[in-house]
Structure formats: C-alpha cells, structure tokens
Image (cartoon, rainbow, N blue to C red; front, side, top):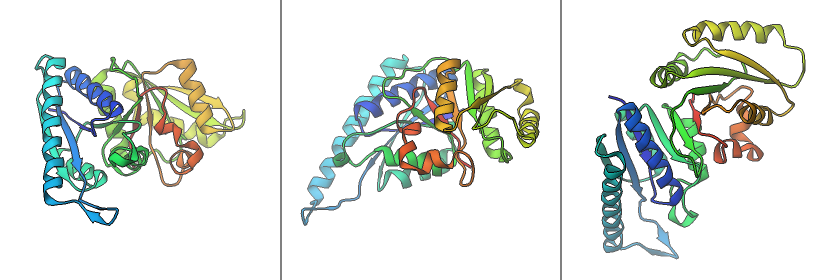
Length: 273
C-alpha cells in the first residue's frame, strides 16, 4: 500500500495541503500519515519554557491532531487509514526520519506555514524538503484542490538525466495516475544543439512506455520559460528534479527564484537527486 505523509502546523495553508493529501490518498487507496512536530523547548526572553508549559503544548497538539483526523474521516468517508505522528525536534529532521521509516509515495506540503512565531513549515522548510528529502515532495498551492493528474509536465535541462531513483519515482507517478507526459526544455537560443537532441533520445528511451512529447521553449530565463509552458499547456502537475550542478540549480538556490517552489501556479513535484 502506498503511503502519503502530510506535515501540518494547523495553519490554513498546511490544512489545505492535508486535505489535498487526503483526497489523493482516496484516489490511490493509500494510507495517510499526519505529522506534527513539537519543537524542543527554547529560551524565550531568557526565560526557558517550564515542563508544565511544554506538556501543555504537546497536549494541545495531540488534541488538534485528533480533531483533524476525525474531520478527514468525514471528508474521505472512512475510505483510508489515517495515522498520527507527533514528534519532538525539528521539522526537517523528523520529516527525514519518517520518510526513512515509511518510504512514502510522496510528502505533501503547503507553500508556506504559519507565522515565524509558530516555527513550522515556513518557506525555508519547503525549500529544504525540495532539495534534501530522498522521496518526492509535492508542493501544493494555497488554494489548490485535488483532481485527477491526467497530464504531467517534466521540466528538464536534458543533461545527465541518469538518476534511476528519480526516474523510478516519476514512473511510479505516471503509472499510478495513468498520466500523459510532456517534457519541457528551456533554451535561450533558437537553434537546438546536437547534445540536446542526443539527451532527448536518452530520455525517450528511459520513459518510452509513456510516449513523452518534447517541447523546446526559447526563453533567456528558465523559470519564465517553464511558467510560459504551464500557462499555455495547462498540465495538472509540474515535475522538477533539483540537481546540485545543472540548469535548475538557480531555481533552488537564488533568492529571486524561490517563488518557483514557494508560489507555484500548479502543484509542483520535486524529486531530489
């Protein structure tokens, strides 16, 4: 059975992502894990949290998780198994630990969490997850709702797409939703270089079962080219494979491009190498 992990801080944005994850779990007949992390007590204005205050925080979180679980049972008409995971520590560490245990089909997160004061699921954690998690991260726009994933667009620089783990995850999504696959390459010149053609053939061989269609978009800015394609082609899901050295490095490491993940127009699936 597939597993979907949905971290939540009970903010509006994260609850929307949880609802999205629950609806997707119904479609896939998957189990859903709700993950909430209580932070390690910190010194506030030089006055540490008392044990009573900390226990109270944990107790409130347990109650909120149970309320959310019951709401999701109503939403899904008891069609899925829902498990609760309450951890202590940092959201980054606990997400990695839970992924290691459960090997999920996806981790589903909103684009932002609550205020910095609430300490969970702010944009930096979403970016961390996009770059570091070993399992697919689905980033859900603030007002998005789940619908069948009929068309998937893969944004690729066509260079060294040889990570079979990433390809395996992509194939799993394509098979699970029986989706059509489009592959986008953004270039800043009109001529298509011979190496791009060669790499597209390699990718065609890897993903040939899905008969992918290749699109070459001329645009100086990668992010702008991808957005242009999304606006014109209307895919249900955009897939990106963050790499340390590659065309999409800037998208995940330059501050001016963070909206690619933090403010997506459609759900974005990040499959990190």
